[in-house]
Image: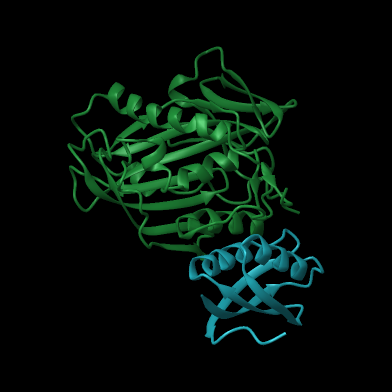
Length: 278
Length: 83
């Protein structure tokens, strides 16, 4: 019988930053060690070696038996893109809250003021949300939003188009129009490692068309965004993601969050979730 | 003000579902009535501001953890029946 929580893939380390000393961390409340052994990276927990692989700059591990292959990001192999390992942000929140926050466009003008949004441009227009049955993923498309500085490479404000994709319960991928390369999408991901139900480590990663911006500036730009989110996430109540809307009154701008919660509920993914409304 | 009929389909057999819908109506300040057609179908008549009726649809689409709402069809009606 499959376990909807343990049989998922989770990020546990950044390959480029894994030194000879290895990394001691946690996954789903259990201690995990990521280490080099004979030139390969292995992940162990409780004396057992976990299934693991390296992809998108990170080490991925599965505490159970993988129910499916790791999701695909075809853009990761597209020539000309810069792959950016942003690093790690520890956030005292449910891993599901971290993903949900990433999906929330409406907060841009209020939390990322003058970077990803600005008043009075606070309205979120109509967009499409669907659970794509053929791939079992959540997709939000045709999302348009005015941004004063949509990317490090953007000069001045533009209306940016986005697509959001949730291919795994603790992973979200944002596709956004790419200012220097019309017709292509910049890819910004959020890989979330659940340390426990109310504590996670967030590993942003990007695949961009941007030949000009220094790598340190790209990393700093994304770290600034995620540090702004952290203070919001750590003060959000309830701490766990409600799968019952309870006192919340979702609006049109929350359609992606609602689709995400429905999808989690259907998959039986409840780690970091609140099942009954407070 | 607007009135609508929701046809809610899914796995709705849980006895908590109808009370949950009634509580959610109350939370949103809406007026409404529910009727169970079967374990897989519930009718909801609802009246209130259009934005809050939209919010009701979104809330019900998630519902209580014991129920699974597969689809919600919405139809405009002239008002709630008397009583």
